[in-house]
Length: 82
Image (tube, rainbow, N blue to C red):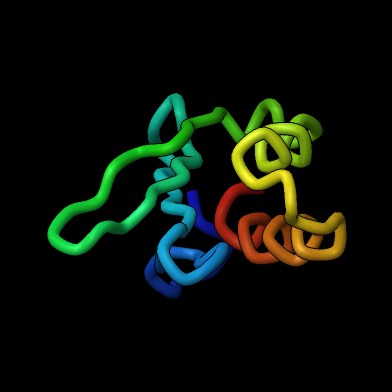
């Protein structure tokens, strides 16, 4: 259940990749990559119960990301998934 009444929006990681949240699903966090006409899933995780492994999950997909970027992503995610 979201902590706010605002609708859940995609959280951008870079120009063509973003995070989609599904609080009611077993895999509540999905990383998607947008191509010209479609998008596809890069990875999924159960953030609610495994949020402590989020940094390694993101590092595997984006080795160039910084810990500060990961922290900022988690602050945005935590508004929707406690």
